[in-house]
Image (cartoon, rainbow, N blue to C red):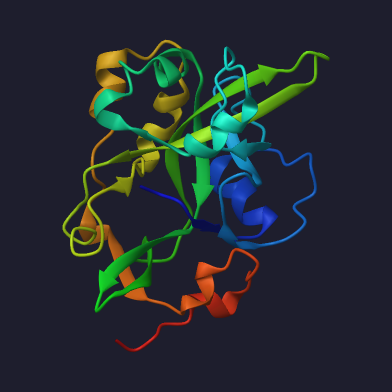
Length: 221
């Protein structure tokens, strides 16, 4: 799964990397993004704009928005079958900008956190889905989920799932409303581990209240 990530680049970096306008002021660097937070996404509806949606998908047909807390990830293998994700996969895809994510390894009776990022620590995009839910008063709630797949060789020693990271040249195709479902499914594969690195970090990341660059400092095993 993917239950925590990092989007700590500055507004200008995000604008340049993803060719988007940031109408809402980028208030802070997020080193410890967690479910139910409002986080940046880029949708196929507005590919030139950075929006802020809540992490945890609430399908448009849901009776209770609290279902979102259980829908932070969507498995690539069943994304075109599950009612919760099938419609969004076909028409409401998004990019989730990030520059790192965290996963925990079970070791000696403890869960030890590791940071995963690109070799050059650059921005990348998770493949995601979004939806819009409306309450009885007509208020809209925009939410998203991150798609996961089988792990690459770097990830395997730590966890049996990893988030789908799209190759940069495939990002716009992922947003393309005319893209074929078959071709899109082929994109949902493990990212090349040779382009990534991983290292152990402080257990301070376990607490979502902790948010700072100190979370990224390597910890000796």
